[in-house]
Length: 148
Length: 148
DNA sequence: ATGCATGCAAAGAGTTTGCACCTAA
DNA sequence: TTAGGTGCAAACTCTTTGCATGCAT
Image (cartoon, rainbow over the protein chains, first blue to last red):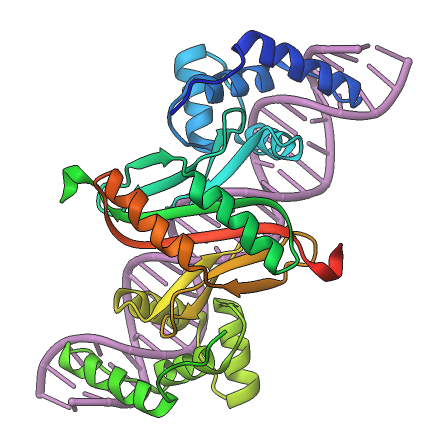
């Protein structure tokens, strides 16, 4: 997958400006959550975000803060949530180009992919049903090479 | 969407044979759950299944029975679960041809669709990633005609 | 008669919320 | 100073599990 198009510093700066502009307040917790999400290549759950922020950045934050933050981020459309099928929602930054997921039902590995044909075709489907398209999720389930 | 290709009676008979063959036992509860799922055009949650079986068929069944049954059905691959984004999983029979979902983010209406191009293209994507494809989910989010 | 299935209630897991305190602006 | 943010714990929702009883085979 592509790297993000924006450096973390400029992304964060931009985010903070938006937050201020909207009349909300910035916080260390949100900064670190975004930092973790920016630099990970995984899809993290709320629990995992708490753990990483503690282990890696020595920041203790309550799980409630994480849930409130991800909800906030989702409203600003800068993260997406993903249902992998284990109980918990997983989150990822929404900065890079759109991509979909392929999940191995044996080892739960997640591979990201992007396919132009599918991207275009969903527009076609939306139109023919008179939907104004906003987003889509495509997840392919199968057995990855290693598990076959 | 297409109607089911099999009548309910033959489907149920077939199911019961399979259950016996596998060494499990049949039950009224499972029969009614399948009946409800067969004849509904909605995607029902566990709670809703309990309610419908009580209201429509005067069968009281515990929610635990429903969860155990849907898990059992999923293992037999005769139902699918669907995550609409409200907390609860929703279930639908897996008898008819494969279809995907388009969900209105305004009124939560679910429209089913089937698109050959997308069906074929996901095979292509799976192959190029050396995945053995088993299934896929495609959900398009947008605003339906009524809500625009 | 045997063992899977059921119902109930309790336990779990994930997420949300109320409230007192904290902190950015 | 003062709204919004945070942490904690309690509450909630959805789902699973233990156990005694029920019922299909």
